[in-house]
Length: 315
Image 1 (cartoon, rainbow, N blue to C red):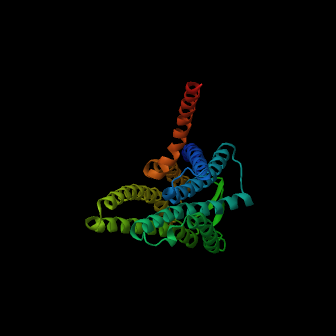
Image 2 (cartoon, one colour):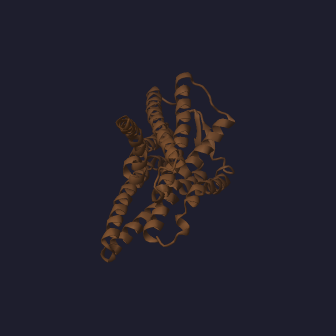
Image 3 (cartoon, rainbow, N blue to C red):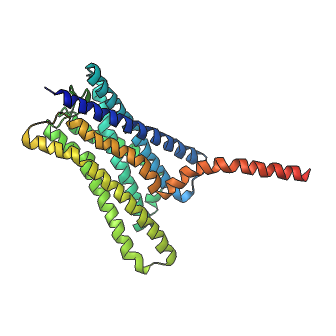
């Protein structure tokens, strides 16, 4: 039986998570729309298009995943207040969808790391620097990851309804399922991302003494951006630790913390909110693209005023 204090703590966690996820959803939606606007009207430089497209994928994934988390937070709050049950096929489906969205979220960071590896260390390979490749890559990954995840999760009945939390999510009681999900969704992508960025950093340091000044300056900029993104990836790794610790404690002791799922999802909400803002200031191409909207809006009236003065002066 859950104590009243535990219910209050769970309600507070869900309420704060709801605010964080709402903020992340709004920010990612605004930035994604701005990115689409600039790409549609061809305002992005050709050399920056792939980077901006990859950022667009990340913000779209944040938008989808934060929307799913908002739905889960609302169900948890309503369940705490009115003791409602949300056990349905849609609830189970949203649990599977959350797993796929989270996996795609990490894979988008892996795609970004792979592109930087090609652009910096293997820049002569033009086949992997195609814009069309990085546009269709997430769709291919969705198909592959969905098949892999569902092949493991559905036979093991991985996603179930949690009556104390009022939403559907994988349960650590199903140890084979939760371990396979942790490896596929979390560990494999983050290990690959870390390996790629470490390789990029070592490559730049090794090439520093044999390059021209212009190439050195470009590589220093790439190194700075790489370090910023590596810090972001490190935060992703750290924010996933609380859930992993609680899961391993459950596996060892056999006792499940009553707020296991809400504590585990709270750092995810924090990371979604932080990433939606941090990416904007960490990636120069994205920052220039988003700020370009404000520049075009403020410059246009000035240009019109100058044109009017020219017309009046000629009359």
